[in-house]
Image (cartoon, rainbow, N blue to C red):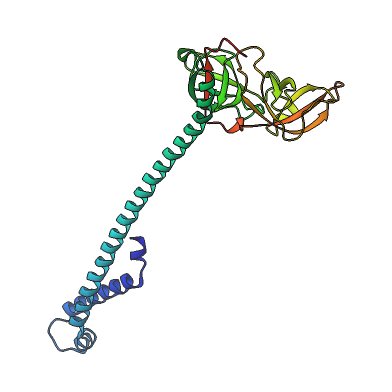
Amino acid sequence: MKTLFQSKRFKLITGIIVLILAGALICALAGKSETAQSGIVGIIFTPANWAATKLSNAITDVFGEASGNSAYLEKIDALEKQVGELQAQLGDFENLQRQNALYKDALGLKEDNPGFEFVEANAVSRDVADIFGSYTINKGTLNGIKEGDAVLYGNYIVGIISSAYPSHSVVKTILDPDFSVSAYEIVSNEISYVTGDASLAAQGKCKMANLAADASVSYGSIISTAGISGKIPKGLVIGTVDEVAADPASISNYAVITPGIDVNNISNCLVLINNESGE
């Protein structure tokens, strides 16, 4: 409507209205006498009928435009509503895809281990200052979760439950130096352990430590959990080896591992509960 008031047509109509009112006022003052002034008035306002007709038509056009703009805005609102509904449907579809990915590999894991029981949970908060990627989930002891339970995404190991409360729990990820799990290279069966490292966590990586100089672990090797002790079962994928380097603090080597799942961007996960056998 603001655009309507600023248009040339609106200004023209306003000018015509002012002109007609001024003419009417002059005519009233001049009366019916044939003075010079009234003659001038007559000359100026003889086309008053023509002007009035034009004014009527212009007003009709203006209100027609206003009505058209209103209809146009209503169409825009309707389209925006449709876009919002489609975006909501797309969000639901993406959530469904994530759930499918979460359960697809976990289903195979459960088939191999019928006794496994999972609790699905969502990440509800993160500490952005924590370079090790710990986060809080919306399930806790009321759902059967306990400290030390393994946290998975499909058949990938994410970390463990470090603290469990009635309605929520805290996940310590594999990037944390306080996390440690027995691990093996799936081809050579080379066994050691995987832990977090402060210098690697910023890159989203961890390491397989204490490797012998002649260990059969090299670039591209797949590392999985060994299931030697604790609550983390055998066969969960940890990640792949990026490089092998000498450990300056000892005579052994270590392998830099890129986790199979980005623990810093997980929105949901599975917690393995009631797993007293295996690691």
